[in-house]
Length: 558
Ligand SMILES: Cc1cc2nc3c(=O)[nH]c(=O)nc-3n(C[C@H](O)[C@H](O)[C@H](O)COP(=O)(O)OP(=O)(O)OC[C@H]3O[C@@H](n4cnc5c(N)ncnc54)[C@H](O)[C@@H]3O)c2cc1C
Picture 1: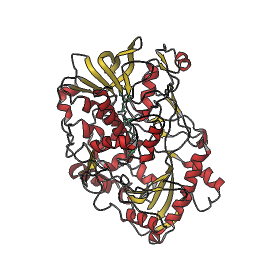
Picture 2: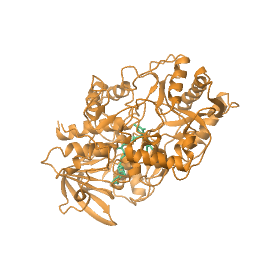
Picture 3: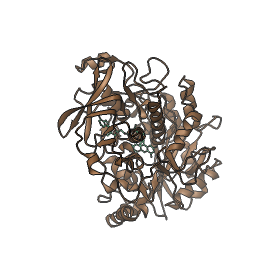
Picture 4: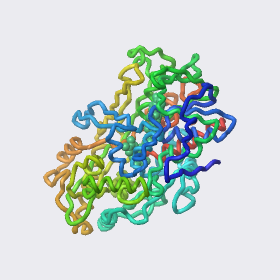
């Protein structure tokens, strides 16, 4: 097994020839999309020098040094660079509001712009997948793939891996004393603490681990492609968008690509691996004639295979933020001055130190909304700043100078389901995204209890020295109805969409347990879209795990 570690001191190892024209367009494997999953699959498959692998990515090569600065995540997710910058349809459960839906468009995909929090969800997430008949996907089955991907700072043990490509680290000292205040308040309120959300007892308050090394972001591309890009059998084409998968009958033969405005065709002898993510994988399948026949015909697309579920089963975490003003303590507002902000970014870029070398979601909690529950059903992240400061932070355009803090909270396993549909047959037109947040009443009842829990946490003695007034929801919002109305007015996407190419043992599922696309031959889907049910927490590490496992399944077909 190859376990190249990322060079985190600079973006290195991108030999120019890898990113330029290749004269022979015939490959064994074509991987579409260089995100959390695609980078892993391309890297693992190309470990075999006998196979030729092409990895295509619609976004750029990711040489922008700001991508490596952890605090830039807030600006990256709101910005248009390196980002598909999708916007949803009006969402009925949010009073017909639309949400911004950032997705990474660059080598590394969403892992190049995300919050870098490294969590796996709960073991029961995978056991629940296995219980639907997906043998090989229980927690015990997938644990070796999590371990293989990781370079855990405390070393390997039963639950953690060391020496893998993805650093899993935590700052020795939290970047703000408020993180410890949050954990202490949880303890004072009678909740457990945890030393490791990926450990044997993840319930309670604690500090998160991140995919950061030496104060710099390590995306899936940094982790899996930087060293491997030297391989003569791996071609990486950024700024290349797959327009459709080509079929001979039901057998996939190649991919039509758009590069520099030209349409070109590349062929795959063995397999095409679709890793475009939860929005773009179903979109590309539908553009290629695989999907709900009626929907495809409406867009004038000839049907290759009727697969009704493609694009359906969309799940995401929807978040609300309980916010307070702060007194007598430094918060992120300090960084809202241009001189401080620019200095922080330069420091992080050059030395990997200072306040921009972290993403300030360092503490959080896995909580039960009802003590009678068997396991947590709410996840929270605490941030020592107001949401406007954190999410709109841009070193050159500071927007807010007020001191404050917030904790967000969301239901871990929402049951509402949305969908991705085509908005047109042009591959360059964004698809229609309807997440349908809170269409199920249970999905709003849990964060409602979460809001009350957070108020209770913030009322603890630990916060007495710095608590100002409650900004959101605001002290006047107390009844169930008032809290629900506030949730619908303010809830936002937290960017963990999954499920639109659902894996399942049943015949309606989009892919089978080996991630093969049903109804055609020669295509697998490998990305977050295959999750049958959303994992309880953030989704990057689970997606990397899926890709590690997929690479094994592709290399050793049963
Ligand atoms: C702003 C944000 C913050 C997040 N924070 C966290 C976090 O802190 N922790 C965590 O665990 N998870 C987080 N997530 C979620 C996590 O990053 C994603 O679940 C994960 O990256 C999804 O991986 P993927 O491979 O499915 O898709 P992506 O990583 O999105 O990769 C898909 C890739 O395919 C490319 N592509 C798409 N269509 C085509 C095409 N037709 N041709 C060529 N290329 C194409 C895209 O440009 C992209 O690079 C966050 C996500 C976002 C967006």
